[in-house]
Length: 330
Ligand code: 9MR
Image (cartoon, rainbow, N blue to C red; front, side):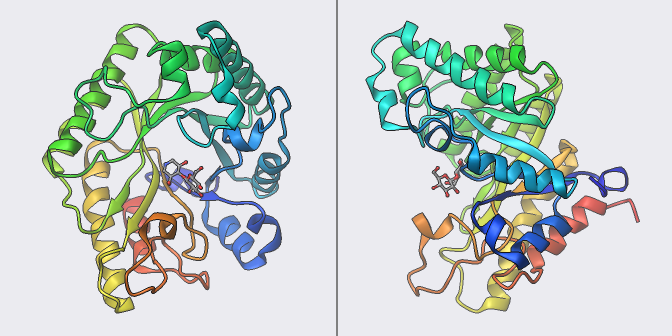
């Protein structure tokens, strides 16, 4: 990870197979700019254990092998999530069975990559939108079968399997102004406090940061949240940064400038308070992004949420990331 000693944080991105195998300019871009990668889907349950009890690591291994060849670190995403689950998980019929299945999965996956994947999103998106409290968890097979104990259980098994791995809880909608976003921050903070008080092995909070360009960032609310997390002795990392340009003007120069300005506003708060050891974008080039799945623009122009354009050229968003990465260093 070449940049780490001279930079404020590691920069990384979510990557995909098969592009990582077939698209040479994409390979070069990732190899040149990333200190870290995280497989965008290749470590999710649906990919790893599509058939009950049968583990398939081919796609995840392709990402890990690429990273190893290029001296890049790998994050893992994700072990306990409500989504991207294979259909068979709906057939689990008791708490005991669900605990056994969760435990076997985590032991197998974390164990396989112990020493290689040094940081995991153990629990992903535990809250619904606008939660009423830290006890108002998002519906999932895990909650339904195990109850809220699925969260400490997942952390404990991951920690037992690889005691050196850094373990995170990862959530979205943390940065915005408005009551439903404050509810999310409060609920997450309440849950994290409870985990820390109960000596659950959690090391940090992942702020996803899928930033809707038309939403306001609550700088003060975000600062308070970050201070509270830091004062619990936990790390904060930015795990899934991108700027959703759904409602921005068509003009590319203007749009790229507004995307960059929005990310600046967000990173200025986060880097000012929390000194995140890593910032990852959810993808690196506009060529490969999840954003059009939900946020196709009315004018049908391609989305531009990421630091490099579809021809792998850097955009103003990349300059913003570089600015915070090297601020005060050169
Ligand atoms: O970007 C991912 C997309 O390609 C997948 O289809 C989807 C379902 O597995 O997940 C997307 O990634 C999500 C991530 O895992 C969790 N936070 C929100 C991300 C964007 O939807």
